[in-house]
Image (cartoon, rainbow, N blue to C red; front, side, top):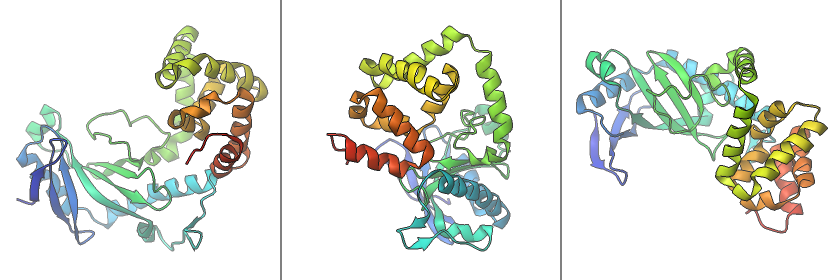
Length: 284
């Protein structure tokens, strides 16, 4: 049995360690509900087969991830001392590392044939320390590389989400076009209802205020239609901060718009600094 020191963790999952030859070290293995011991062995065998070819593919998408973050944020160095430097793709591994393998129970047809090789790896990277890193591999192809989202490799929720999946980075323009066409086909009342539901989920008292901000402030000032303004707003770091810091929802719409412009014209570091310096409440 390749799984060592196994036990049932606080979530009722079987957890243990296994040797990862490519790293020449043991990593944590977490077997989610319904995983048969025979399937665990199969996945750990695939872990042992990870080679430089697969790692080059992972590094390629990790480079897209790194460059995207450097372009959209103020992070350019590690600890304000060491820059992100590397001579080739494999050297990029000095800035990221996988320490956990998740094993998800496959659908019955796959479980019976046992032909599909999959890996669900997670770890950390120096350019996005808070969020973590996740990589999904199926039959030798990286199908997801990006933020840690606790994805199950057998679910397709990540497949067409080009935002945050750097395995789809090269196809992002094509996927954006498809997404735009899909949105255009959506009934106006339907998307407005869906938007209100999203806003009410984290701040019922502010749902109408958020709608007014998008439709009457952001759309008009940025010369966009209301749908486009909604997409831009919900893809902003400002929107993410609102979900994390409800006090931000109590600020004025003029303040929100100033925050939005700072994020677009400068970076999220300046956005956070502006909020910290101009709000009576403390973010940290």
